[in-house]
Image 1 (cartoon, each protein chain N blue to C red):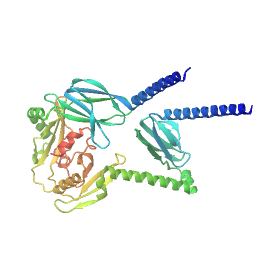
Image 2 (cartoon, helix red, strand yellow; image 1 turned 90 degrees about the vertical axis):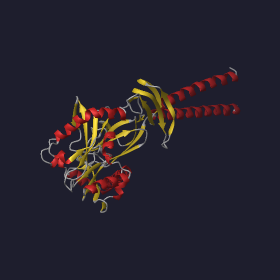
Image 3 (spheres, rainbow over the protein chains, first blue to last red; image 1 turned 135 degrees about the horizontal axis):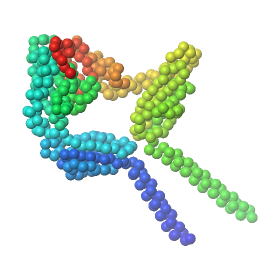
Image 4 (cartoon, chains in turn yellow, orange; image 1 turned 30 degrees about the horizontal axis):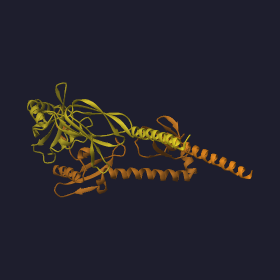
Length: 213
Length: 219
């Protein structure tokens, strides 16, 4: 066999080996993420780099409702930016890839405008629930207007002290949840600060917002 | 003839060297491939002779290469109370220290009779406690400032304690306070880059009228 032919054969073997090696490295360093989305008009995925900056868009699409598989690097942080359809909010969602296939769901909540409109029809029922739950003590408090959250199934407000006590005149926070068509108190008793450990069943974003009231 | 002998020996030597290199490369590849996609977990235990299990399966101390995921590592020894640690292995090296503590008279006597073992346990225990303390400060940098008292613009005193419900976590205790002081305490916490939503706070001298007031039903 001529040396030229030997060289050619070795070069092909090395190329195939290199292809297998880099292909395996790519597949083993990336994983499939199934992104399912609902009521979004646009979705973008960006990688968050170690210095906190964001890399260029990894995947972008006009959405609606559906799902898409994307191949992303393992053990990396990503952020999904999404725009909600009419009546739904814009937002973002962080996630971290691991070593296995995972599923990420993007489903925007109602917009603030939509929630504010819903509140007008819910507020009386909510106030009645608070008053009936604390019939004697609630007269020392004014129930502020508050806000609805998520899909209009959460409500939070501040109970502003208007009584006479000098020593226990703190304003208190309260959260209610609607289930089976009925409002129920989710944070009993109302308290000065609602923390995520004492109220693990209340979404943290709602606790944060209500604590700022 | 002598020339031929030399050439034969050279060829044999080359063959041996090539075969040795191939064996080394193959061993290195196999070693690398068995660790591919796995994370290093280093287990240290005292006293020696403790039995180690990982997710209920018999194992040993020392270095292991495991696939990423959740693992519960247990150290047990007769006469000692088990020590257990749960870890989530990602793609970073993890170190775990296990220190079964003596329960029976015999176990306690064994440590008294072997002071070097007890010293090792104490050193590892201090290192374990120190790393916990460091991570509390990393989680809540303002704990270095506690206890803190404020006598102006709303009186309050703030201190912290270790949570009984959550390992390696704290709660804040706010007392000696007025209503304005409790607001000021929350502002103080926020001023030190801590969201009050993310920390358990007890307002010790706040008598909640919704709990102690008359006639409330709540839920």
